[in-house]
Length: 555
Picture (cartoon, rainbow, N blue to C red):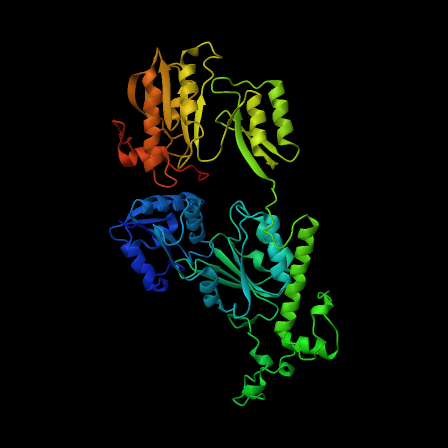
């Protein structure tokens, strides 16, 4: 079967704003993959489809799951609100495909179905605020450095763009919208019209019309799109309108126009245009300072815009050629990429059973991290090192040469073992080390912790981890599906007792492989175990339901 990925933008969420093609794509799909809220918004369109729901920030796992399913012949719809190509899933799905060596024309087939983006749906509710040049800027700095976002705000503000702000504020990101207002007030009148639209065309729609200096006095969140007018935007009653500029050449209150159609495009009737400016330069015989090579410019009074463009392009190419030749190159060779420093993050520990860092190891870690980096201790008995480096491989080699265990961070398998009573109960250590060698650091859909206790006391709490191992007298008790946090936190189910120790590494590897291969995006191990019902012959048992009263504080 030919696999297919349909990347569907379904607009603001209301049924009447979903395109016919988007509805068809959803109907023909076998699997729907999307963020929880998006799945709920199109619930009425779903019939037979399998649904893969994920939480916020799980875009990569959604894209990877879509590609995996399509490669195996399924028709998959990856849904985004608004337009899938505007801060949506289209680009990410393509990136995942390209990473796997895919090219257009190969399987799986990919189709992007456009939808109405927030800038358009919100503008329609406000009036006509984006009638002239407009841009979109996301204020989320989770993936884009704030220094870059700041430059984009500055550039858009100074160029008098109408600006639509996406992701303006969240529970943790509160300063970005404040800084944005500060930058804009350097270039815009404090009374510049601003529209705040929350949940456009949804049940809880809210539209607020305010001004640049007053905008922060209103509620702004992740569901809000902020549209900031330019220097000509105005309010007419409740309508926010940005003129296109017709009043410059047209008389809007009479049927008879002062300029005939043939006269409207003449340079003298649009003195603000590039053609008019060039004619003025020619008449005054002032040459543009940027064109240094005067020999390529004709002395004719009838130079065209094409002549000016050709001259500028030739000058630019000559400058590039000079810089390349000065570096020992000839012609217009492709410039080689320059290595760039990046933030490097890694987990470090003294070992599986060993919990003690030596003083020399700590000094080395501090030196490698430097003044600008940071060190964080975690509940997985690891130090997380974060630093900026151009040579991550050398940093890892230095850590390992000092006897330290170095592992990746993020959505990976973490082995959390006890200290085996400071090594006195050492019989289980070889098995812990073998399990760590095979599994620690492997990527998974959601962080998976394997707890290992060296005796039946289980004082390190292994039974509460995703997978718990309790070693006693040369055998293992196995616990699956523990949950350490939340109101329904509970230990794992004891699914087996007395498993011979030498069988455990292979058995555990099979259990983990089943999870890695079959888990949904963002699906934790305890949810996976409950959904599939059986792993390696071990059956899931539903826990008795408990009634939990809300605390007074609401936590």
